[in-house]
Amino acid sequence: MHPEVDAVAEYVRAENGFLITSHVNPDIDSIASQLAIASALSSLGKESVIVNEDPIPRWLEFLPGSEGLRCDLPAEAGIRVALVLDASDLDRLGWVGDVVRERALPIVNIDHHADNVSFGRLNLVQPHVSSTAEMLVGLISALGLEIGRERATCLYAGILGDTGSFRHPNTTSRVFRVVADLVDEGADPERVATGIYYSRSVGAVRLLGEMLRTFRESDDGRIGVLELTRGSFDSSGATMDESNGYATWALSTRGTEVGVLLRELENGRIRVSFRSTPEVDVGAIARSLGGGGHSTAAGCVLDGSLDEVRGLVLSRIRELEFV
Ligand code: 5GP
Ligand code: MN
Image 1 (cartoon, helix red, strand yellow):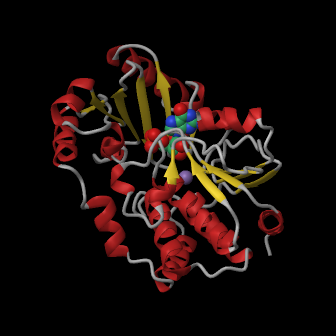
Image 2 (cartoon, protein in one colour):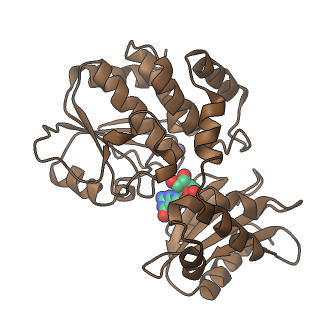
């Protein structure tokens, strides 16, 4: 039905020894997708290893199979093929991308970012699909497998993550049909919601409070800005990945079209997260600053103080999107 999906399924069926990987600072979609495809490969009797530059955020450890994720390359692994998920280019993979290049591994590139540069031998890129997890529902079926409860739980979580809990504009009627099927397969929405939204650390809740206190709006109310300094991470005890869903708060006031979260990294650089309504393409803004992402959720990392980066980002938004 989808020739590209069938081509990937055929290639995967004929191969063995998969290095499964995804982007740095993994989000729910990247983790959940890697776990689901690893489980599918295992059901096909194939060897695979999941390796990422960054560890799985602790709050995602409830996902079935998460103990299999690693941040180093096992010496004994007979790796023949790289399966790259949810990443728009090889540079997004950190050092794992260097390994893929050095070994000249054939790459299967499975992604839903519109700015994907088709870096694979096989490229399955579907920007109109909500998430890599949603794409994998079709691929796992094309591999002749049932989805099953554990894979359904992962894929449901990935879709929940990338649709912002069914709030973002990528929440199509098809998404609801797909997640309805995943629930029939055994995904438990209450259990996933508990894992993702109701298992925070006390520090993460305190960090949220500190962040919300920094909220400011542009004079015309179209841009909302939030900040998290090193000091707020230190005083709350929360980690960077615990604040990964917090950027949506910058878009939460009435009339706001662009939300920006600025986070001070340990190396002093500033991680910028953009969120927007469908009228504004923050992907283009992030790309103009050396980053990337989707039209309504994107990011980049910049040098400078919080004040400098805020100034640069706000002027770029004005230049590219607002008069
Ligand atoms: P977040 O703001 O949650 O970190 O990222 C939102 C979206 O933008 C995700 O799809 C993420 O992959 C993408 N993104 C974030 N930072 C970067 C970056 O530095 N480069 C690229 N290419 N994409 C990014
Ligand atoms: Mn994704």
